Image (cartoon, rainbow over all chains, first blue to last red; front, side, top):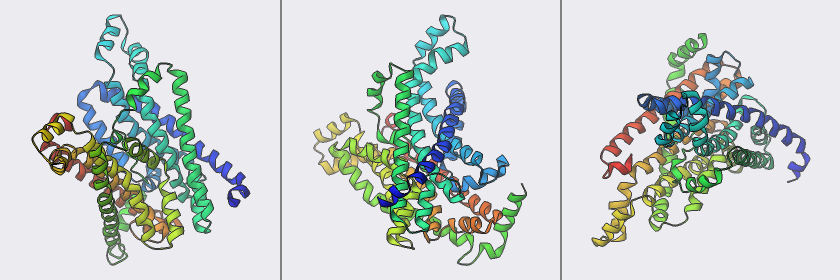
Amino acid sequence: MKWVLDNVGTITDATWAHLWLALPAIVISFVVAIPVAWVASRFRRSRFTLLLIAGLIYAIPSLPLFIILPLILGTSVRSLVNVIAALGLYGVALMVRYAADALDAVSPDTVLAATAMGYGPLRRFFGVQLPLAGPALLAGLRVVAVSTVSLVPVSALLGINSLGMLLTDGFQRDIFAEVLAGIVATVVVAVAVDLGLVGLGQLLMPWWRLTMKRSAKRSPVEDKQVVTA
Amino acid sequence: MNYVVAAWQWLAEPINMNGPNGWESRMVEHLWYTALATVIACLIGIPLGYAVGHAHRFRTAIVSSTGAARALPTLGVVTLFGLMLGIGLEAPMLAFVLLALPSVLAGAYAGVEGAPRDAVDAARAMGMTEWQILFRVEAPLGMPLLLGGIRSATLQVLATATLAAYVGAGGLGRFLFLGLKTQNYPMMVASSLVVVGLAVVVDLCFEVVDRLVRRSHPVRAVAS
């Protein structure tokens, strides 16, 4: 506890750095996964391939990805862009499955009704399908957000500042409290981001509470697990 | 692209490949860590998950344990145990089992708990004992979900095993951290490629097993 009180500044800085890596990655995950999921949901044949690729990307361990990705991006290993891109890639891989399921779950009758009312493909997607899939999309995004936040610390092994720095620094200098603080702070940030998304969901989708009860009954393994260290 | 070529050359170099410190034996070591931790997690998680699932109890506890595990930074768990238990294999192994356990537990639990009530009631009406119901009705019906849990757990451990070298154990992470410290980028890329290859191969193996299990599943509609 003493270590924490003596180092509030360090922890605060690391928390901001952590968010600065995680939040862009979460936004990228959502924005990129939606069109990919639309393709997977619209064209049945592409679904299997897209989800298989997403699954394989998600199976890649994170530290090796942080090292290999610069070869493709042309950035340095220690660049923030590299870390955000890697985190975003995992987020997209995880989100595509949720988003495809969410879009599939929209009633075809509703979509047909929208078409009959003269909605074009674009307006139908943004005006009907996306809002109806909203609650399920949010449930997926919450999983993505939590796993992204808990994945960030690995980048500290490359020397990038985040709450992971408390883990590596604490380990190297044998400060137990620092490592523990790093773990607790990461979990706190994950919970905070999750609550933030819930708040955002309530703001954007006032009808969300009604559908939440249904999603709470889901089986625990339907939420795909975090597999990357 | 030069780095890929350099990494390839690094891998092909006999001095890097063979011997107790070569990447081949480190790869075997990496797989050994993964298998050992996953098996231990299964030995604990499957009986526990089956027991709790058969009794239809503690649902919230299981769901929240997987949720909490998702929020835990793996590096934190590894370094924390590393500080507590010192250099060696015990610390990372304990961390791997801890990280693998929730997936296995949730898979075993969900498979048994989600078995159709009608089938379970029918089995009971036919005079099956509770053990027979568990092992001959619920467990086979829940096999795809259990396998999914074991798959997540294995990949989680395979990924986390890369961090074992950070706290003084072996595995393919050795070359990664050595490369980081000595700015040897080809070595880092080479070992990363081996880890990625390993993960992809293991995931594809699970995909094949998953197909086979689903094909022989008693109720295909439930499995898919």
